[in-house]
Length: 153
Image (cartoon, rainbow, N blue to C red; front, side, top):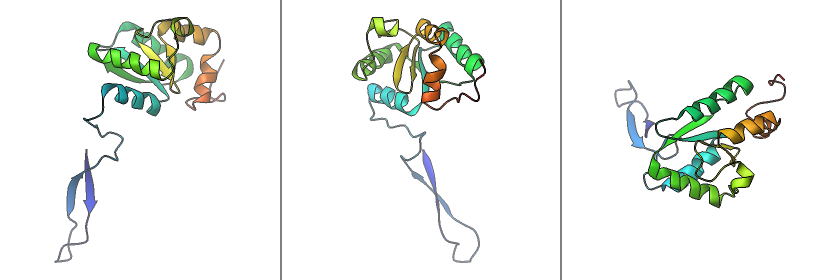
């Protein structure tokens, strides 16, 4: 990413010179030295609601996005992973306390995989089960993406 530097007027007193410089403070900056697992952890931490899906995006991911948007008005971040990156997602889930198969309604390699507030929800089945049991909205309220005032039952 490039940043813009501002300097005093030129010697003739007219205009401003702008200089492009590299910056790492931008949220859009990409650190090429960052491992895939670290990038996934960062994305989970930076986004209140994130869905990781296989590249190209699968139909179950579209259903998850549609459920979140139409029922509670949430736009999740959707990150498409290549096959070699999915193992890093599983490793990241394991180190973040992603839980086991019984807890999440699916294995670590379940794709798409959704996280709310840094906690692994699981795949499509887990999301639907959470929504039908009435647990989805409280989780979304907890992470600040919806309020009870905005949600209509």
